[in-house]
Each structure stands twice: as structure tokens, then as C-alpha cells.
Image (cartoon, rainbow, N blue to C red; front, top):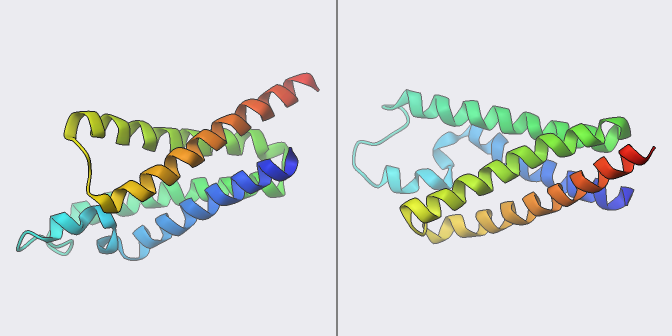
Length: 138
């Protein structure tokens, strides 16, 4: 079980760190902004508040990726890591699901990340429940 937990935390941490580091370094490269940039005059230089929002959320989620890796290094921190990462991924999946119902199907470029986030959310919740049950037994 420890190996599976570590793999799930590592995959989750890598996904969060990769995606969120890119949002911090170059928020204009975010896939979800491509349709925004199709309108003439829409740039992050012009809409600084949008860049600030992207970087702020990116930094928060980047820290969640760091917390995931802490759960691998410090076994006593594993439950906390699964709670944090599960909240992030389940929240993103919930938001995407609500958007799917309220707004319709997104661009195809967002479907692959949505599927990956859904898989990681499910894996993290399963590992969270198992870790919680194991810790309650001891």
C-alpha cells in the first residue's frame, strides 16, 4: 500500500508542480486563455488583474504539489498530503463538471487534462480513505 500511496502522491505532485510552475512563469501560455487571445486587443499586459489571478491560483496549487511530495518524504504527513491534494483535484473536477452542465462541452484541448484530473482525484480519494482507515486502526 505504501508504494501505491507514494506513486499517487508523486503523480499528483508532478502534475500540480508542472502545470502550476508554467502558470507562474508564463501565464499567457495557459491553454484556457487561447480563445481569450483570439479577440484583438486581449493581452495579459493589458489585463494585469487576469495575470495576477492566474499566478495566484498557480502558486496555491504549486504549494499543494509540494505538500504531496512531503507526504512521500514524511510518512506521518501522508494523511495531510492526501487531504490537501484530494481537495484540490476534487475541487477542480467538481468545477469542471458544473461548467460542463452549465456552459457546455469545452474545447477539445481541455478534455485530456480534465480526464487526468478526474483519474487523479479518484486515486487520491481512494488513497485518502485507505490511509485514514489504516491510521484509525493504529
